Length: 450
Ligand SMILES: *Cc1c(COP(=O)(O)O)cnc(C)c1O
Image: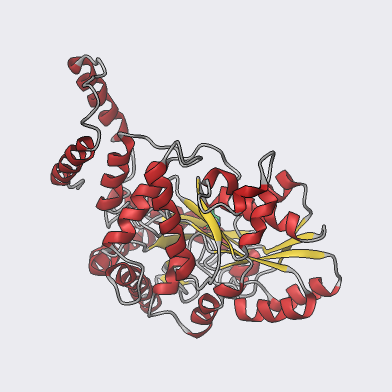
């Protein structure tokens, strides 16, 4: 399952890396090989207590295995462990980060940009909102009630007032509710989510941009999950239009550690206007921003950061360039096809209540029964029965506002309904779908028949 054969390429690359330092006198870290072996064996046994995240039968949460090239390049860089805070902590890895991030900026259509990698989508959004606070007069931050929960938290950290806008029946931001709020004034920033975490809904960015013309606010796009789908050729009309409008956002966040095949610890924040670098100024000279040799630590909220994350991303983009029709894009398209196929399968079987047609690659569904509470109980039972058969799903609490539209046939005896959810993020999910639905059906019918 872990392609251990690939370690030979790491060994060869390490030998090459070592060549670059051969003028140094030899040295070795003293380790007791026997004890090292024993502790690693103990570690491996501990790690057996996990769901099988990299396997195609894991179709639960947003977990996508890093590509082998990312894993190996990360490990290769770990032997130096560069710190991309400053050029003297990570010269090559800083250059690789700038190149990789510039490619991501181009992917979204930015003509100019300032940006860098960071720990996660949460930290990337925090940084974008922090810049938003400096760039606009004080005011309220708005996001859809389906936006990631960390926006509210980060506004609290930043001391910015935060309000939510209701979602419509498709779980996108409700435009009428947004305009009602904008009319009341004092809005500084609107966050549009391109790919919500729960259901993969894509906020109507072109219409939100029109509202920006009229009401004047800063627009941040949280594409932590969905961003890379800009490359997919099988999105539908409004979804496609939202991705095509990303270039007009003031800032964008994408998580290479979600759909970009990277190990955790890789978020990315982009500002469209490089001049906003002035907001990062601490006790440092202005020359920072006129120097061609920009230290990434001078345009970043965080200080120390893993250079290895940049190296892994750079290597991945070398092997799998982010271009339409390329292998990377086809992987995203395959996940979306798999999600549509699963959705069709659910619609065709009266045991299930399908959720909305997936916009990206997340599928949500309930079970045909009399009430929300019974559907919740059965979803949990199907989750367990599938896991016993090696198929790993996820559960999602669907609030009343969505449940009443999606599954009006369920008596509303509870404020929400626990539904089943699958993120079909792996390219392999397309070929594995018959196996996936077969196990799901067996598990569901075992529960429903009981
Ligand atoms: C996952 C996610 C985040 C948070 O990113 P982390 O990398 O988990 O911190 C923010 N926004 C959206 C839309 C997400 O899907």
